Amino acid sequence: MISALNFDYPTNHSTNGTLRAYMGYSTNFQAGYNAGFLSHCATSTGFLACGTTDFIRTGKRLAVGWDDRHNRTLVAWANQNRLTNADSRRVRIAVGVVDNTTLGPPFDAPVRSSVGPGVACKSGEAGGYDCILAYVDDGDTVSDVAIRRFSNYATTTGYAATWDPTPRSLSISSFNALTAWFHNAYFYVGLVTASGQIRVYRSLDGATWSLFTYFSGQSSVVGPSSVSYFTANNQIGWFSE
Image 1 (cartoon, rainbow, N blue to C red):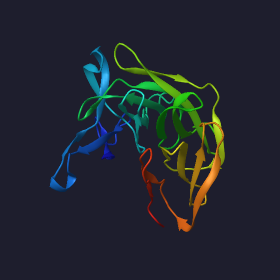
Image 2: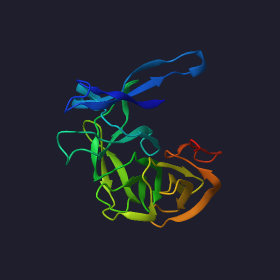
Image 3: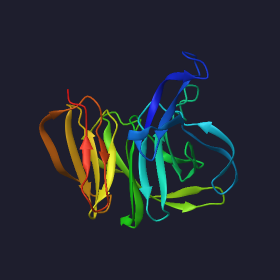
Image 4: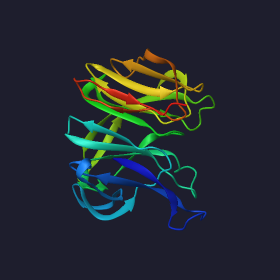
């Protein structure tokens, strides 16, 4: 369980203050859970070993996926930096965990997103790549949902990525967080349109996308979230207006 904590660090309401991600973790949430700020390696002393750490700083929803090629969790977020615009909203991805509240060293995606991204992986299924990143380019005046394919590879300190140089478009606008998953040979992206309609798009290769379904009579003020399995049933949820 991961969520954003809504006060600034290091000083509330300060010029350089940023929001930190807060999380709870448990083997059985009905019996209780532990909580703490979510951090990542800022410097490293070895593979998934931190020298120093820093908080995950974002004001948008985080995306969590599973890289089955490397058997590692990956977390993607739109970075928040109120002092450097070029660094703000840059999508960062961390693959692997050091402990319950610390992720491995993140790498920068070649995109900036104005919404919380979505991420999903299945080894080799994205046209030879392993993963997709769903985002809304920060400079897109119509806020079209875009896709970039990528594959992670191990380094001496953690992971980095090889990227498909060509962004793909769903040709649909969204101003809210996205969600993504893989199921039975298809990648899926769930979103809320500019008019509030909940839609799901799918693709066999992460490059060519089509509308899979929409929920008639349902609308949401925030982007949907999903719980998915590679082969079993999936769930998508939202807050109704």
